[in-house]
Length: 444
Image 1 (cartoon, one colour):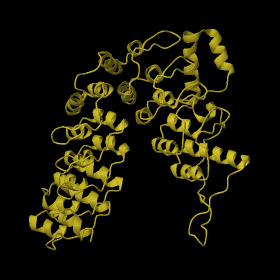
Image 2 (cartoon, one colour; image 1 turned 90 degrees about the vertical axis):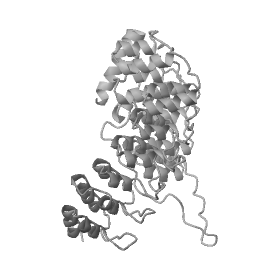
Image 3 (cartoon, one colour; image 1 turned 180 degrees about the vertical axis):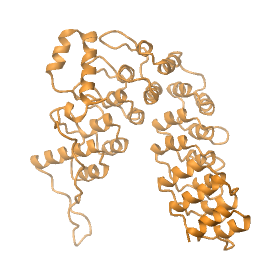
Image 4 (cartoon, helix red, strand yellow; image 1 turned 45 degrees about the horizontal axis):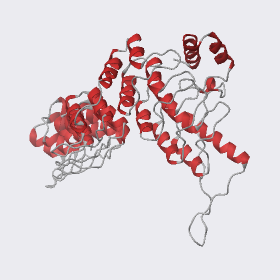
């Protein structure tokens, strides 16, 4: 939906909420700066979004005698305004590197333009998670409000940016702040959401984060569950009903069970009831590791949004990320990537996730994981790479033939031998894998 439609959509809801007088007021006020509008409707330039910030040296020259950098001079008012404007442009463009340089030079993540947009508020509404992390580290004020008196949490909830919502819930932000439309973040996720997966994830995150599930919207007295039911958002309504049942007994055990069984609503309620995100079972497995093991993607998305660790090792030296190489679940891989898993962590055999995936014939997984930057030539404790495992432990049939082609295309070295000096080609020839052998010869 484009920006004008968003403005109309908001304005169209106002008469039922606050009467015709409020609609006139909204129409005459500053252009829409709420979380759904595009830059032009937020009072910015009516042309294209600002471009990425030019690459410039963020610091002054090093002091020749000490080797330390000299402190950058404090910018004057004009320079500060320029830095702040360019930082907002970088925020719109999701230019993290440019924003980092500008912040080092003194740009203010809280500096607002005429439409009450700051780099921080832009990051929340646009769903720019890495940029949000950056500005939070540089002092972004989570109490900042936009022109609708809305917090960053409200802006992110309206757009269904569950990862941003989850990150903000870890700050001192006010979960039930009411904007000038009479809505909190939970209302906006429902009233301006469409009940799709990303809005379900957002509502679950807010439930887990302690949002008031009974709080009515200020202007019409309608509660969150009623809003969901009126809009036919069945899954959202089910999540809210579960939350309204109250806290669960033994929240930690409930969270572990929810992760195993794939009950994302129970997971949200368990967290709301006080379960620790990294609680462990008798084998040292966290809820996220259990969710990855059993391919419970909905639970995993919730846990990741709230900050679960994708690198938490259990007693078998497995992590949520490493397990994806065994299961071959691309959906789980995608759910874990926003948590920035360590692709170099090794399993108990000394392998990274691409190795078991190649051994087991998980074609789609291998195709996706080689695009993450994982080391396709990593050698495990057996002396084997992913390519060697695909040949030695594979069946030589179509899945493994495709995996060999994928690995070679990703830069795998076909000449790397095992500990006995035997190459993948020689193994293929010994096993009678003619198609794989031909592919390997062509790659030499």
